[in-house]
Length: 320
Image (cartoon, rainbow, N blue to C red):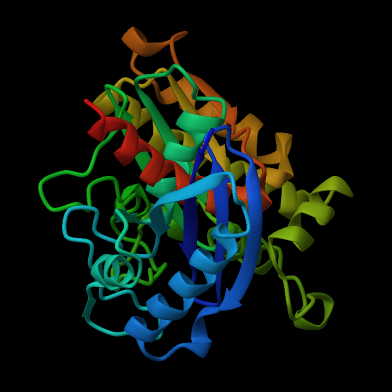
């Protein structure tokens, strides 16, 4: 019996991850390529398509049925990557069409956080859930909103940019979007570092006592060692995130909120203050109904599984 498989492609500013995935969520092959090596998007699509078609033929009992793509600023409705600042292709790039022309297969595209939310629903802890939020915390903060079992895209395909909700009106934290005070300037690895440096400055820490390359991993290790400034930085980050999630809960009434990404490796240092702030600021009618949970997706596989989930979702919905 012929088995169906799909391709999952996750495009990042530095690397692109791609793989073949079966209906059970098993990654049959995976590979990483440097995105920056391709200054022409159409050639990028042709070369990746050729590679995937070649690899798919190795599985003689399987048939490649479609491609799912997670990309910064990927528009689900149009198939266009729009003005992605960290990709080598500028402007509006019809990436889904390029892949479709190269493979003659169904192609679906969305941004990486939305794709990961689908991955959680299809292969992770949100199985069986109809309403949940998925938050990715790395360099920035991304989000995917699932309502009635479907991703929320809004009228233009870009709904759910929680990282760009302004959480502090008179903030000096400049976001990559060009505005000040966005959530991701506080609740992300970048935001954590800014908070840590602020606490150090307030304690008049000498410059020669502070390492040059401070990152979230360093701050986590300092927190484990009992560093008060590091612990305070996590508590402040969690407070801001919990407040934002309480506001989001009032809008979407989710069953659960899943946290994913590098910052969640800090465990209790980020989860405890987030949950405390969330419960404190949550409207009474929602109390006891919404859990904040770690994603059950393997971080190294999540990008490919999320993109694969996008096309599996399309193929399954088209059956009806």
